[in-house]
Length: 320
Image (cartoon, rainbow, N blue to C red; front, top):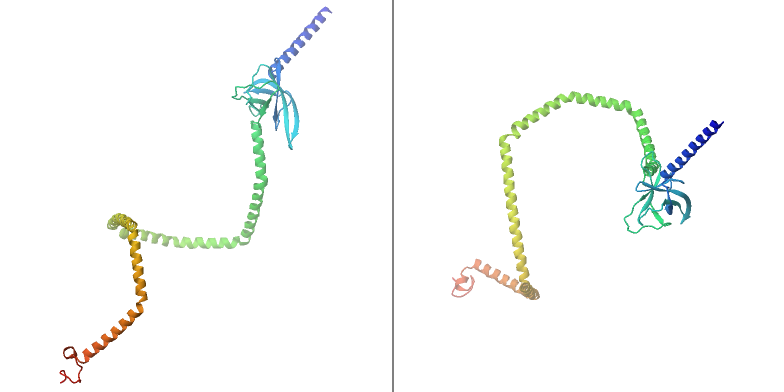
């Protein structure tokens, strides 16, 4: 009887020790091994986060999530997370909290990215929240994009391709024998003409090699290219000379602008004077032309007029 009670006491003591050890391990795993300070943060998505989720600081466990409360403001839902963190842990003011996971099979944790501010957050302050930075969130975004792409682009594209393939299949079904017949005829014609085409190509190649592509023609082509290069150089030099002449002319015109303006004014005055007297000038020229015409006619009829001064048939010393 006494041995039985001793066994019960030993079993009970062992069970109690294991329970204490388990509580100690849980406390170590959650980071709650002493007094804690309460902080809070706001996140738009808390996938994988619940009561007891580990809070880490650059991957080091410093506490756990104590409570999650949904808050709605400005037609948007945000989640307030209460965090219990080691009392002696100092967190810079510009630190950022976000949901993270170290791997595909790892549990989600609330990781605090350390800031660089020299000022530290007081107990009860808010830690700035940021979107999740884990593979699950990235895969979720990619899955949403793929779904949207599938619905908006791939399905219509496949439907259109299916319609086009059906139409092509219908056409081929109706005209396939005729198309095959044409294809066979073209292949036969090509097969019959291939030797002649090959012979023509060989003959043309031989002609080119013997009469066109030879050393003499190559030398002529080379000389032509040299002449072309010399002509190009000459044209370039001529262009420089023309540019120089134009520059000189421009300087001359610019330097004698006043004299040219004065000359143009004099020329305009002269032309105006000629225009005013053109009628009388024309009349006098017409009379002079008639007199010269009459004088030349009389000389042709009687050249002696130049000597005697009288026409043939008139009385006077010149009459015969």
